[in-house]
Structures are given as structure tokens and as C-alpha cells.
Length: 425
Ligand code: HAM
Figure 1 (spheres, rainbow, N blue to C red):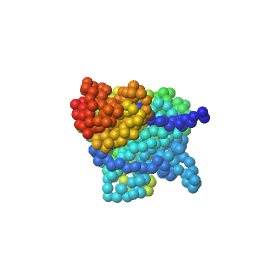
Figure 2: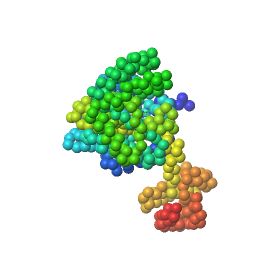
Figure 3: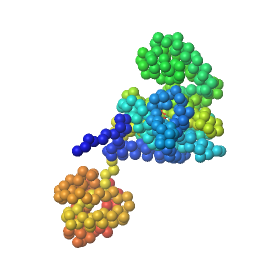
Figure 4: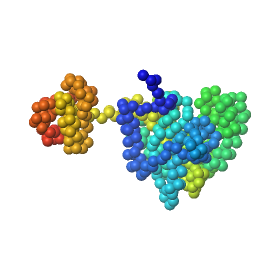
């Protein structure tokens, strides 16, 4: 036997026993997002590297060290998307979706970041994201945040908390940045290497540090919320009032800065304590300057993305995962000579009963082993095709889960019998 080939580190297979939970999460999102008027957009996984460098920011962790970037055969620098916002904005501009319109878009799919894999953190992970364009006022922020809360609730997750902050305008951030740098420099002896490096490039990210040795210096840092420009402060105040009015609890966290540079004003995250260090399950915010930065007309926008792996882990842990769908029936072939007859019969039944979940025994075996397979499949009924049945144009119906007496049923009546059983369940 040759040596087997393993998957790439950080790239997970989702095996069939878990896909029902994945679909539960994805379907819940799709139905709810569409009920809020979001339309699906499907985007490529590969984009020009420049798109991400320009939108996410040259000096972010993602662009500096986490992107899967390579030159293709034409020598173009391409990158596997590390997130969906940049590509969505690119597509909206490219296809004129923003002209006199306020599109609400959603997308789902794999994203790629070369991070250190750990629980809840992968190199290929999946997001469902939404982006809403063309509306500046806080009512959209409020609706989007409430929608994200409703999504988590629909998944049965009620122990996640909402963290909220405003990053203000870019001018207010630049002024705040100077104050923050002065504060950090005054405490330079307490900074770790990472913070020292960020001091030069992206000092706001220092506020995000999880290093306990830096808790003091971060705690005593000036708060961005105290240095917002008037319009952003007003936007934030009105947003908070709307969330209060809707009865949505939240925690204002002035140190919430996010790892992508395109944000301004509202930023938010939903966090769970049940996932260890990687507790953020859904995150987003406003990016009113991004459309212009990548070549469109100035267009305000806001969005978020949820990490599906993390949501799936929480749903599984909460025991809220739906059971895998069991087949309605398993067709047992009592005699090898009847195999061809069985294949045709199974097709006739599928044709007559759309939606029927039928497993056909194609692997031969004794009656006993076929019944064992039928049982393991979770099927409600075993349908047995033997010589007698074939001669009579019938199958024997055996109830594997309930009390229904065994009987021979003409094939023409099978739909009624299975249908009745379904209704009485
Ligand atoms: P993000 O915070 O980078 O934002 O990612 C959003 C979510 O994706 C995270 O909260 C987390 O649940 C999940 N996630 C991120 N990285 C990983 C990973 N390595 N493994 C597993 N899950 C991960 C964005 O991507 C923005 N595009 C969100 C957005 C949309 N903002 C506005 N519109």
C-alpha cells in the first residue's frame, strides 16, 4: 500500500455526520437573511492581491502575514480571499449594483487565512456574511445588529453577548491615535514586542492585546469613545437609543477595534465564553469609506460575517443540532436473481413518490445482514422483495420502528401505506 495523503494543516474535512448541523446553520441564515430583504451574491474565492491590500489595510495581521498569495501562470499576484467584504464591494462596483440603489447582499463560503490553527481557528474556514449599501443613518446599524442577534437566537444560542463600539471618523481616529501613541510611549517599559511593533504601524490594535501583562497600560489608555467627532458621537448615541428601545442588551467596549482597517463608526462583535480564546462568532461594522477607496462613488455601507465553524461548535455543544434525516424505507432484495427487478422497482417508487427517501440494498448479502443494514440506516420501514412478492407485483412491508403489522402490499398501494405512516408519525 502506498503512503496515504493527508489534508493540509488547518483545512478540515466536514464529514457526513456533521453536515446536518452545518446545513441547519446555513439554512437558518439563508431563510432569516432573505426575510430581511438580503439577496444572495456568489463571489469568486480568488481575487487580485491588491484588492485586499487596499481594503483590509497593508499593516493588518491579515495582509502582512496571513494571506495565501501566489503568482499565477501569467505572473499576476492573486490571493485566496481572507474575508468576503472586499470582494463583495468590488463586485457591487464592477456590476453597477450601487447606482441609485441600496442593495442588501449576503454570501457564504470558504475564506483562507494562514493563522496558527487551534480550537475554533482554521486556515480554511467558512463565513456567512452580509453587506448593506447606501444608507448612512443608524437605523440600518440597529436593524442589522438586531438581525444578527435574531440569527443567533434562531440557532438556539442565547448565551452570547453583544459588544459595541464606535471608531468615529478617520480624522477623529487620527487625532486619537496621537494621544494613544503618547500614552503607550509613556509606558513603553510595559509593552510587549508585538505592541512595540504596532505602536509604529497600527497602534489602535494594541488595545486588542490579550497579554495580561499589558492589561494595566491598556486600562489606563484614553478612550476613543471620549474623542469621537460630533457626527459619529451622535450616530452612536442614536444607535444605542434604538437598541435600548428594541430591548437589545449590549456592552459598550471602547477597546473593541477589529482587525481590518476599513471600519469607521459602528463596530460590533457577538462573543461566546464557551469557545475559549476564539469566542467571537459574528462580527462586523460600518465601512463608509471603503467603496470609494476601491474605485466606486462614495457610498456608506455596513455588514458583518459569522464564523460557521464556531457556530456549529456551539450548536453541537448546546445539543440543539438536528438529527440526521433517516430514510423512509430500505429495500431488501431477498434473492440475488431479483437485483435487476429491485433496481427498476426502486426507480418506479422514487418516480411515484417524489421526496421519498429510499435506500436500495445494492451490496448483496444474506437477509439477516440486509436487515442489519436496514436497521443501521435508521429507515422506518424495510421493504422486502422476494420471489413471492415479485410474482405478486408487491413487496412485504416490515415496520422497523413501530407496531404496524407486517403485510404484503401491492406496489401500486405502497405510496398510500408509506404516506399514511408518515402522517401518523
Ligand atoms: P472578521 O472579524 O475577520 O471579519 O471575521 C468574522 C468572523 O469569521 C469571526 O468573528 C470568526 O467567527 C470567523 N473567523 C475569522 N477568522 C477565522 C478563522 N481563522 N477560523 C475560524 N473562524 C474565523 C470579517 O471577515 C469581515 N469581513 C466582517 C464584515 C463584513 N464586516 C463588514 N462586513
